[in-house]
Length: 291
Image (cartoon, helix red, strand yellow):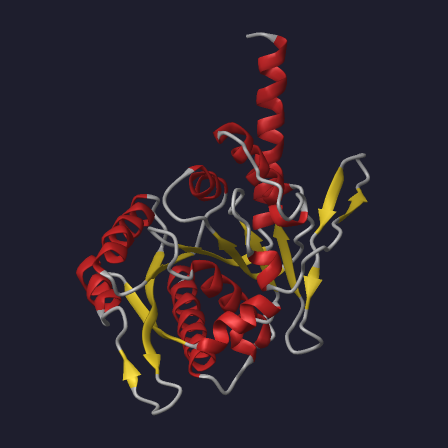
């Protein structure tokens, strides 16, 4: 074996050990993913993380979408400088920017490629570079002690997802869909992908389930309704709930304030209920595994 290959294997082993050491300090590791784009996956991830922090949990949020990171904007952390801390062994760790939305939540640690590249700068990388970037976002960031480590995945089943799933032991996968048939088809693939990865808890959320008319208050099934629940039943996984189309959700995301902080809106209430359900299911799962 050549010297170069030995060095590469040594570096790989080192980063894997760092990741394992860090994940041992995270109580629950939750992935948010979707089979296809455009279903509001990042909106769900951001609001789930914020709802957890609103309950006082210590939360880390990793945007694992290397090519299309949106979390920085949605969390109100655009143009934030990422600092680094020098360790005793001479290595450096990145310090994840934090937000508590002016005291409205416990501090949320956030890390995304969006902090490290320009707003309009594309990341034109093949698989090996994407994998290396994910390892660094997991292992070279000072995440610290966390109750929940939430990962926002890109759509599909590509390199980013495989790298994370093979690097840490997820406790849960929350799969986001909309009611349309094409979205449900891809959602089924995502569910079965997580099953093959042996993720202990898998659940489905139906986003954009219905629109509440701003004039009459009636519920309008714009894209159909109930497909997410039927799919969950078919696949034998949990259904965590429906999230309505709420005009304020778009406004809140653009303003960098998750809709869950607007406590009087239907979408905010839905996120609160879904988060409560997820926390309960994960606690129950941990209790059973410790018996």
